[in-house]
Length: 125
Image 1: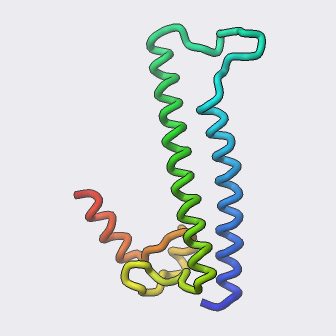
Image 2 (image 1 turned 90 degrees about the vertical axis):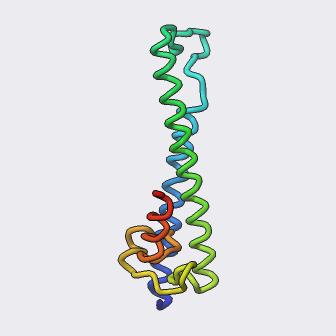
């Protein structure tokens, strides 16, 4: 892969990382901060058990999203490191070239389509 394309993917990864950081700040604020306002009004807290269950589900769902986004940030950092090491476009399993179409769709991927398919089949078992 030539330097121009590597720079393109590096910029794409950096922009994705910045967007995810913004999303994470929003999600974490939503999930982790109490809705009680400074006047002591408890109207933001659910008093009915079903509402409490819904609130707990929503909080747990949001925290799962945060965890997934953090995993993607880790993968982006690994991809940026692979760009520096000049191994970005190589599959970490079989060392085959990862297609540019795949990198365009998932710029932080570390597996070619064949290895990713094998991984998904193993995971489903």
